[in-house]
Length: 413
Image (cartoon, rainbow, N blue to C red; front, side, top):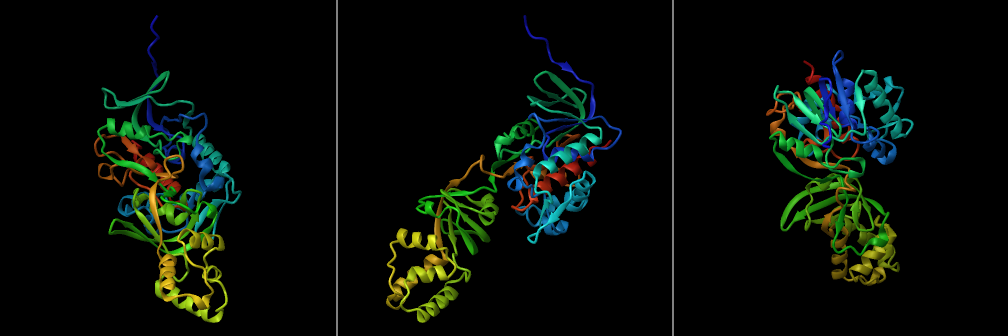
């Protein structure tokens, strides 16, 4: 006997797919008096929120809309309307209304004062439910399509939901352990949208070769990181760099990862001076002051961690003479390593380690003032599904909040 066909639910005004930050924000900002349903594939909403900021939830960043907009990889014009309408202050007020106080750290990052991401997630869920949104969990979506009446038909395992308006807020492909498996990209393509190829972003890089596994855990501030692809200079960055067992991580590398490809070279300055001239000047002064000290000890005095200095000497077969015996050729070779420490990228660490997705729905096909599709009336996008990715520091959760809220407001009849 063949199984019975799935039953149609009662029609709703707005259907939201995805129950993390973008979807919850859309639910919180959905207009009152409307029938709104949120579908989440996991048993609970907000699984990705729980792991952000090392479990402490770096939910936003201090600054004006213009200041924040500079941290989205050149997408300032697109993100500004959402940031103007629903900036960090709106998130902070909403969390406060749900009993979650926040604190702004000296670096501008905004965290819950409790340092517990679960409290943020629970507050957002409570706010959405308080708006009368029906939240359906353990409801993976199988397909999305247009109905004959111009509305949307969304199928789950046992039901088909009908809606006048549809907000896709399912995230990208980063951190699939949380349920982000790229389904939304397939649905967007089915609706006729163009995709900018999704790639991992805010992720570590693995280097080849990498004889520095013993330096894992070392962190230093690099004033200059030159990014090259063949003979072409791709960019210059600065910031904190963290050594891992397989390569490099840390905020500077994570932010740059959206632009990095396998085979690229990263040339790091290991000293605070940053330039060859200033580094050489300081090294010569140290040699004159302590002519009997070993060169490796003087390098550590330049701000290079001792473990990294020792590994550098061993890997690059550098002689370790007393300062007074250092030749001019040896000094020049050492200076070159200190200011242009080379790494060849084998690959990005991948989706399981990435914090967000670069690429996604082409922004030319989305109205930046409403988040509505320019191709399909009534279809809205929010969060990571769009070709927007922010820097490390709370910018991606803020974008999810802002774009989800703007989509919901714009979906009002």
